[in-house]
View 1: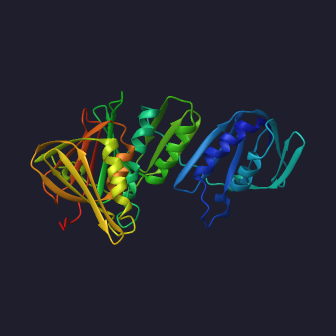
View 2: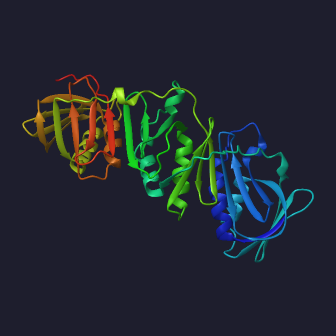
View 3: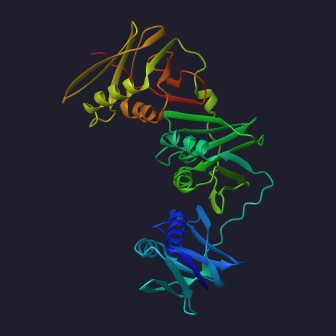
Length: 368
C-alpha cells in the first residue's frame, strides 16, 4: 500500500471514522482504524460492531493494500504533522511508514484482512433529508433519550416517516420530545436508532459541507450517507411506546410565555435547589402572572413573569432540569404551555406552527 494525501484531508478523515472506535473492547483490532486502498480508492474505516463508519480519503494512489493502525496514535500523530503532503507506505510486516516534510514515522500495524467488514445495507428505498433539518431534529430531541438501560428500546430514538412527514421521538419516562419536518419522499419508515449513533451523526454532519443526508435501511441495520461517508448502525429491537397515546389531546389551561424570560427565571430558581434530588421548582399560573418559587435549606427564590393565560388557574411543580433542557433548545420567541391538572403532563408547543412537541411530567406539589 502506497499513497500520497494532504495533512488536512487525512486529519479530516481520521476524525470522522474515529467516532466509531471504542476504547472499551475485548478485541484489540477494534481500537484501530482500517486503511484500505482498492479499486483506485483510499478508504478509512472504524467500528465497534454496533456502529461502523467508512469514508473516502482523497489522494494519489501508487499501490493497493490494507493495514489497521491504532486510532489514538494515528489521530494524535496526524494532528501534529506539518501542513503539507503526507506520504504513506506499508511494508510486508504491516509497518506503516509516514513522511511529511522533515518528519518520518514507522508505526506497527495489524493485518487489514482481520478487520471486521461493515454490514452491507442494500435497499432500493433511499430517503433524502436536508442536512440542517436532520441536525436540528437530533439536537432538539436527543436530550430526552433514556440514560439507563432498564428499557433498552428507550435508549434510542424513533425515526418515523409517513406521508412526507419525518418525526424524531425520544422519551425517558419523565419527558418526551417530538420534532417533525417535511421531506419529499413518500417512503414509510419506523425504526429505533441508538442514541450514540445519532450523537456521532450530528458531529459528522456538522463537519460536512454537503446539503443533504441519505437514509436507507434493512431489517437490522440502517445506513446514513453524507457523500462519501457512510455510517452504518444496528437498529434497536422491540416495540417503541405509542407516543400518540401519551400526549394529551385536550387542555384546561393554555399559557403563552416568552421563552427567554421563562428560561432565565427557571435557571435562577434552580440555583437554590440544584443540590436536591428532584431540583423542584413550583409554578403558579394566575391572573396572567406566572409565579416561580423554589426553596431549600440554602434559602428561597420568588420570581414573577407576565404571561397570557387562557382557562383555569393552576399550581404545578417540575424538576427544573427537565424544564430547562427543553427551553434551552427552543429558538422561538414565544411558546404555549398546556395543562389539564397538577398531576398531568405539561405539553410545550410552538405559539405558531406544529414542528415540535415536548411533554414533561410534573412532580407532587406541596404548597407551603
